[in-house]
Image (cartoon, rainbow, N blue to C red):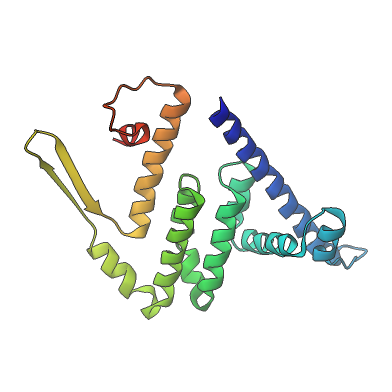
Length: 207
C-alpha cells in the first residue's frame, strides 16, 4: 500500500512539474502576444511560486529542455517520468552542445529509458550518450560499443542456465526498459512469488 501511494505521489509531482513548465513557457511567449507583455520568469517564480533562486533556475532549465525535446514534456505530464530525469536530459544537452543534433538522434531510446530507469541510472546513460557524440564525431565510441555487444548462454554444473552479456547504451536501455516494465506490471498485478531465501524478489521477476 505504501509503495502504491508513493507511485501515486510520484505521478502527481510529475504532473505538477509539467504544469510549472507550461506556465514558464507561457511567460516566455507573452512577449509575442498582440499586446506584448515582458515577463521575467525567474522573478515571478520566486515571488509567486515560493521557489528559491536555485529552484527557479532549475525550472527554467527544464523548460528549455522540453522546448528542445517536447516528448519529455508529454512523458512528464502523463506521470511516466520525473523532473529528475528531465534534469539529467538537460545536463546531457549541455554536455553535447558541440553536436546537439547527434545527441537528439538518440532521443527515442532516451525517452524509452526515462520511463523505466531510476533517475540515477538514466543520468549515467545520458552522460554516456552525450560523451559518445562529442568524441570523434560520435562514431568511434558508438561503433566500438556496438561491436563489443555480446550475450553468452551456458549450463552450469547444477543444470541452471547462466547468462552473461554486455550491451551498448542504446540496446541496453531498450532491454532494461522492456524488463523493468514487465517487472512493474507483475508487481502491480500482485502475482504470488515463491523464491529461495537468498533470491531478491525483483531479481526473480526480472528472470
